[in-house]
Amino acid sequence: MTTKPSARMRATPRQDRSRFSVEAILEAATRILERHGEAGFNTNAVAAKAGVSIGALYRYFPDKRSILLTLAEREKARVDSEVAMALRNPPPGLSRDRAAIRAFLGAFEGRGRARRAAVKVLLHDSEPGTLTSGFAPLALPATSTGAPLSEIQAFVLSRAVHGAMRAAVMENAPFLGSQAFEDELVRLGRAYLGYSTQVPPSSEPGRLASQTDAS
Image (cartoon, rainbow, N blue to C red; front, side):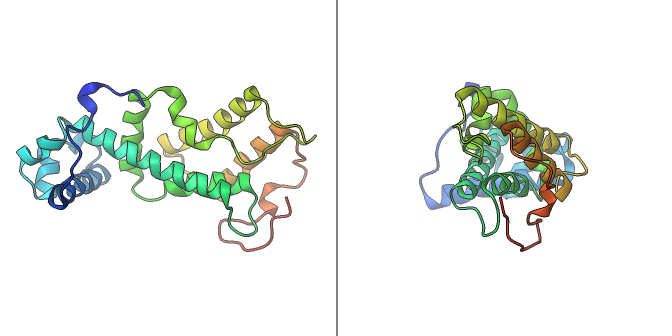
């Protein structure tokens, strides 16, 4: 991941007390962003909320942007891990494509204001390809004819689905956590690959349902 030099953490905490301070700073930053947004986010407010001196904060973070970037990198790692787990071992009754999409969308439930602020700085500071790295390959491994996805097909599919999800997160779309949005994302991927979309994706298990996925 390519970032501006000034945006990196100054040092990696190695002692328990240092790690505790860094965690307190990041948690305080998240709470401030969630309650006040970026307008109320600054290093003095974060230090006060975390119960550390401003000097202790600057020991690890040169500026507020470095705090945001650290939060963003952690969020991306967490989301990538949850999507990868869903792809490897989808929950009972769920197809891999739906499981991966649900894992991504579910990872942004709660603390959405803070997570959007973190993702925004990641979008600005990262190489474009790193943003979709955790979501490729997208669940369905082949077209409806059984042919494996080409490099171009995998690129188009992953960027189309991931782009729609990312836009919904960044725009705080009112339907972000809805079953209907999940269904449309599943339909998008399957239609591109040539699978039948005559049976609505909503006939598969919903977010709270338990029936078996026949796909």
